[in-house]
Structures are given as C-alpha cells and as structure tokens.
Amino acid sequence: MQYWYIIFACFLAVACGGGSGADDPLRTTAVAWAVGSAIDGPGLQGHPVVVRSEDGGFTWGAPTSLPAIDAARGFVARAIAFSSTGTGWTVGDRGPFTFADTLVTRDHGASWTSQASNFAHDAGTVLELFDVHASAAAVVVVGGDHSVVSQGLNPDGVVFRSVDEGASWRRRVSTRPGPFRSVCLTALGVGAAVGFSHISTAIAVTTRDGGERWQEISRNMHPQPTALHAVACASPEHLWFTGSFFNSEAGILYSPDGGTTWFDRTPAASGGRGVGPIDFVDQDTGWALSSRIMFRTDDGGRSWVAQEFPLPPERVTWHDLEFVDRNHGVAVGTRIVGGRAQGGFAIVSADGGRTWHESSLSQDVRDLRGVTLLEQGGPPGSHGAGRSSVQFATR
Image 1 (cartoon, rainbow, N blue to C red):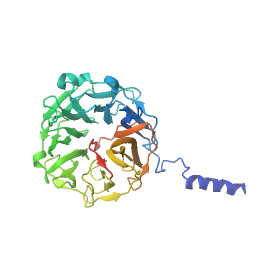
Image 2 (image 1 turned 90 degrees about the horizontal axis):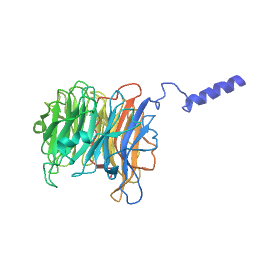
Image 3 (image 1 turned 180 degrees about the vertical axis):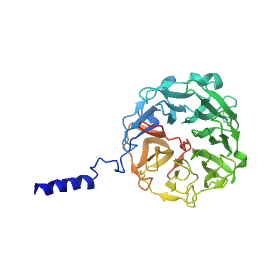
Image 4 (image 1 turned 120 degrees about the horizontal axis):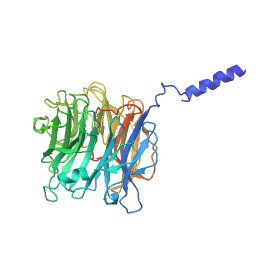
C-alpha cells in the first residue's frame, strides 16, 4: 500500500506542476527589468522607479527609486537596456523644454548614477530622450532636441552613440523633423531609428557601421507612413517598422535588406489606429501589439495570428514589448482612469504568446514605460525591442 501512495504522490507532483525539471514551460532563467514611476501621493507627480523580476516577468519585486537631477519629481523613465557585462541604462526626461537624463548601473542594477552631464555640453537642458539600445557594436540613445526651435514646434531628431559603455557620448544624427522615438542596433552594426513629428511626418534613418553614420530612408518607404512608432532589428538585414498611414490605419513595414526595399506586412485584422510595440527574436518569429490585439508571426510576417491577452476594466496604454526567446515575453503599459495614470500593468507569456497572464505587480507602481529581458549568465537579446513612448489605448 505504501508503494502505491508513493506513486500517487509523484503523479500529483508532476500533474500539478510541482516538477522542477527544465521541461516546465513556465520556468525561465531570464531576468526582467522594467522602468516607470511610483506614486508619491494623491495629486503628486510621482518619481522614477525600476522593478525587477527573477522569473521572466510573472512576479515583480518592490519598486526601487531611480536617482535623477532636480530631485526627480516629474521625471519620466521611458526605456531600459542592458549589455552583456551587466551595465545598464535607462533614459527619460521631464518633458520638452526641461531636462533629460541617462542613468547608468554597472552592478546589475544594484545602484544607478546620472550621466546628464555627458549630454549637457552638446544640447543644453532641452533634450527629451525616448529609447536606448545596447548591442555588441555600441550603445545608442534617441530622442529630440528642442534647443533650436521655439516652443510648440518640432524638435530635431537626435541619436547619441557610445562605444565605451556610456563613459562618453557623441551626437551622430541631428535631423528635422523629429523626435526619434525608437531605435535598434544589431551586434554586426546594422540598425535603425524611427519617429514622427507633430505635423504627421514620419522619419527613419538606418546605419551599417554601428551607429557612426546614419542615412535617412523615410522618402523611400512605401506605403508612405504618417508616423513611425517602433522598430525591431530581426537580423543584420531584416528590419521591422510599425506606424500609421494617411488613413490612420495600423501599419507594419518590413525590409529584407537593411532599409533599401520595403514591403507592407500589416495584419489584415490589425484594428485600432496604429501598431505600436514590436519585437523579433529571429528573422521569422515576432510579435506586434496594437491596442487590444497581440499578433504573432512564424513566417517573417507573411501571416499573423491574433493572440488574446487579459485586460483590466480600465483603459490600458501599451508602451513596450520584448521576448527573450521564442517562448518567454513581457508587455508593459499603464492603466488609465479619467485621463490619468492609475497603475502599471504587465502581461507575460511562457508559450510564445499562445496564452498570456497578468503579472503580479506592486500597487505602488503608477505606470510602466519600458522593459527588457536577459538570460542569467548570458548576453541580453540583441534582436531589438520595439520600444515606443507612443500611447496605444485599449479603448
């Protein structure tokens, strides 16, 4: 009888998910990081924070405050990236015509310091920074520079590059109109940056030498977008852009040759007014998020499958999406009530997006703007995340 009890107990352990083997689909060694803001109190602006997950985004630890100049009040942390050495960056600002900052960690997120002085000599205190991407080729930061325009006009789109892990930065692009809102860069140095102006003008540039030189390609794109929200580098030559066209419909553009030729890969049932965050783990497998719909492709965008995901009763504004491999990914955003941010929101998948689960997140987190994942003991995914500060509401 005791023999059968042992067999039955072992059966329950496996059937109920109690096994500890590597074949457990929910298990991952990936560490997830997300940035946003925490609530100071009723009517207060909040302060920038970073949250960390040890299980690939299913559960998140308590928010850790990020230091920034001017006591960080009103500062918005928009994006985060890590290199293979454990050095990480998060970028943000307090809005146009104020100040921007890049924060760096060199101890896997245990402490963060400001690098604002590295940018001040170049663009004063009127930058806004939207995205950061780290690869073996370089670290690049993109945004807009308002120092050359009067308030209300379009800023220049700017790209900053560092080849010494953020010890120094050089401006490599300054083009109008801007700002740039998303950037990606492969380990072999092929990359792209995209954005749009307030007058419905899309802008895109590409690089083939690790971000040293950039070439504008916006005029070569067809169909012509009015806005480009995010970019993903699927491979050294395969680029993916999301945005909107003149009829306000969602759009996904694909280039198989680093930006020379373009194809429309928009899902037939995209819905909403635009496609926002996008991410690819290889040249065939990727995801794109549009308001209430998540799409996955396994054939390089020739076909897309709509995936359902949980939504709260409030409206959600999606900001970022990243997968560390073909199975494990996270999307982050903000709950909106009465036009105000009322809490961060994150969903996670361990089966390639076939099923999504709402993450466990501290109620102190007011919003989440950027996310990144990396395997413990290995380099972060260099495929390029579609980070975008553009809002994509669920209703």
